[in-house]
Image (cartoon, rainbow, N blue to C red; front, side):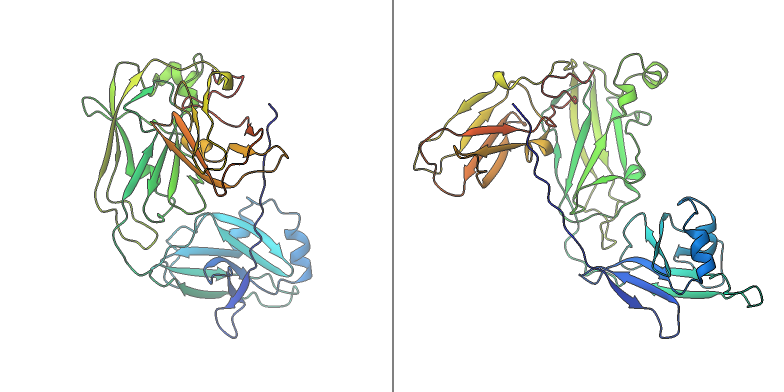
Length: 359
């Protein structure tokens, strides 16, 4: 069955906020007023020509324009923030790697090259304070997927859902995977600098290092597999993790599970059991799988089309430890043939896809 993919694109218009009337340093905000970048304005033509040929990771950028967290003017001991540099007309723009945190201040230093060899070099410094967010109820973990008590030893990922947007850049310092005797598993997760968050900041994807899953790879040979069939484990999230407003989680969170035999078989939709609804009703269409599939991918990789090929709108729910997919249409079902359209990006817990095993 061919895969069909829908692609949506959102364009965000940016507004530029001036830090001070005379300052050549500006903050760039999105349409909701949140600061997302900083700019140094008025670069001379000669400097622009040179920067256009400068690699994005060249230290020359941060030597000219740098942003610091909590640094006081004139005190350079704090390392600059990580982020991306670009040219916007005659301005240099810095976009932080992680969103700015409410309640913190950011010091921006700008050393624009002089317009000529006889001109004196300039130095500018400006502090931007990000207002603290209103504190509501402490954030909680609302779900962890997969939800079954026994997971395959080649389990590929976890999804951790929070009740509020979380701070970024510190996830791995608040996550532990413990063996049954309480000993931590050494570096169980693939620690990605960007961290894998959804757009809401409420769902984090944790990848188990694939190098410790596939047989014959060096990480597995040297460190062993992360999960071993027949053993029990506990995923721990510590309460020191702060949400977007700077408030810590309500409490520590633990999720216990056991590891079972690996799953090394490709997904076969012919093995699925489909229970069709009655025409004229809004009863759910039910699709049952012989084994659990990936929760997040199930939410977006299966669609229903009518006989004319038009996509049906409705609500999707996933139950029975990710072994059952329900679709309830917005409008009553019409008589006639309908098509279940499956994106081949769909995976099971171990990364197996339709017609292709992960191992």
